[in-house]
Image (tube, rainbow, N blue to C red; front, side):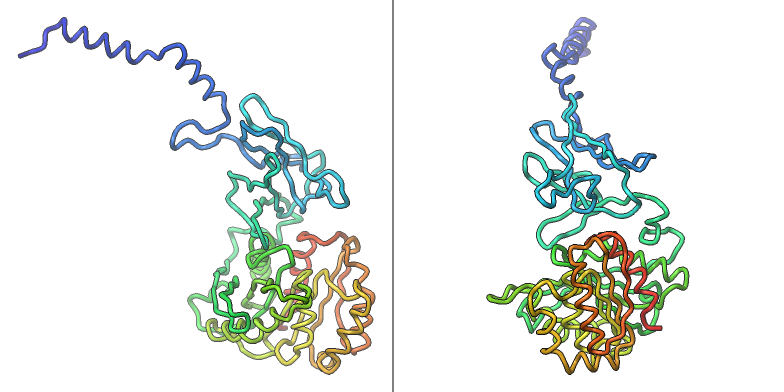
Length: 399
């Protein structure tokens, strides 16, 4: 039976009525549209969480409609974002608009470089939900962003230069009885070649993790850019996890576990897995802060394994008798280091809280006959300095 005209008209009227939202529904849609939260299953936020401004300041934003107190926090951006050292206010308080979007703009410009940050929402630290780059700490994670500019270009990704590859590897440490990880940079052309390469073992600091020298230190980009300018030798960089299981009665910086793992497990693993030149003339070690302590204890004292070492932002002398104990315990190895090390590089910032350790550490080296290059910079215990120390150190290796 064919439907009548009346039945068709009636059905059209019903459909039209169903298509008209009620007044409460319209009000609800208006409320949803006013929210900073994405609307719809596949919708994405329409705000920038980090926006560098032409005058060098930066605006930070995060959508948190239900929050009562939000601030942006960072240990890398002081004083633009106060770190709270010494009991001062930590972070920058943000202001919420009617949509639930919180924002703040730094009062001070931020120098071109790479920085870590997070948001603090009602007391809980939260990585930027819109971030695409992150950096692990010993515990927890940071969001990162890069402030563009020529002064930071040495450590940025450049499209027009060849790039090496960073791999994450896992290995079993017999010395520690645990699974361990390391990040390994291999230079451009490694994957399609057969050449063997010298190796730099590069260690992070106490608050960081195995990925720190790439995720925030940008060691891979620094070397890529140097290689493109013929400013350094091609090399493999191994970036291990610097922390080891806690040993009761032993402090973190004197725990021998890292050295046991480095010499007993990691170096043999790397030499067996990658195309290395496996001798001391083609092997170097460097580290920052805690990694600098590891280098002093397990690198400088092993001239049979390493021919070159770099110590960034670390020294002896903060504890009574520390220098004397180190020199006495390692007298024979340090004497040999003075005779055999091809390069000992030492760098420190004048505002570093460890700056007072420079004089006793250098005096110890002089007493042991260890000639060294000393790089004293401005600034403190920061990645801004450590990236620049690495840029200065790499061209000196394996020459």
